[in-house]
Length: 263
Image 1 (cartoon, rainbow, N blue to C red):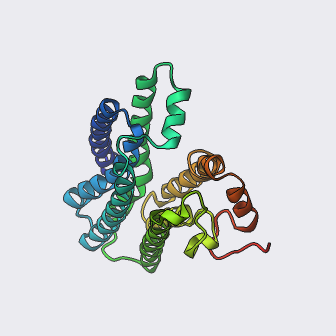
Image 2: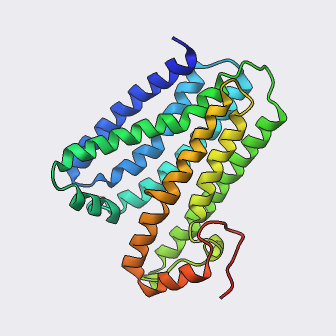
């Protein structure tokens, strides 16, 4: 079996098993929100698989594994802190799914958890493309992609910390976060998340089969703009913050952090 198929299949088997355990736990504690933290953590699992098994270029393999692991660890800690701070109360969007999927609830969530595992491997496919690149030296384009990836990890972390600090202040209860990067964009965290995958794709593009790496930013972009990202987040924000969030929508860019609409 070709390495480009073999290693992703190993990763898929492992992350599907992890998501099975997560689904069992979520069912027992009646909180399926935990899927988000496990989804983030699965990228670290993929990074370990790559580092432990692929040695085409030690520098390239180390770099892609390290970047993937750092990003995954940071996101896992961030999401885990948010979810486990109210582990006895399921998050809003999962409460809504629980209502919508009342018929065959556990089966539908089992499928959902497994689909998240599949998305882990599909999105991480460029990691394998990068690591299996037979070229002995990293190219300029690879360094550019790695730099975008690293800078975006920092940007996403800053956005998450700013939002966390805003929510920690009891005086901000019911208010809309509009400080720091959130002053310029309603979703700076999503912006940098997309840029992370753009960096990954650029990193992978010069490798054999590198064109397939474009599936990651395209998939993330579709999810963020059309499915579980911006639409669900903004619907929930309007539901909980009402006119305050509608006013925020009118004066702030939906995505690009450095563009501020005029009132």
